[in-house]
Image 1: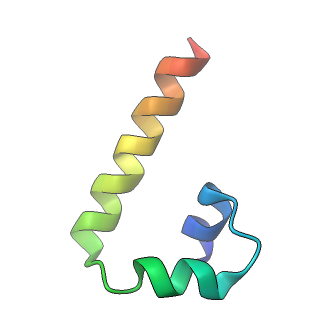
Image 2: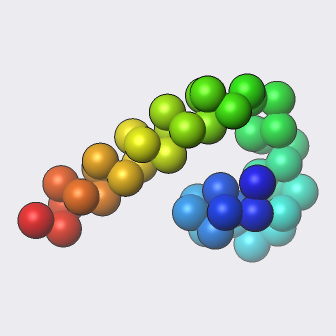
Length: 44
């Protein structure tokens, strides 16, 4: 959860936890992959 907070730029851990704690691990990994793909396409 802390990594997600950093990825999204939330200054407060509780903000991230309240929004994303209900997601299962598979969805979190899919979201991280989507973010990574988006960043990769921007940086090339």
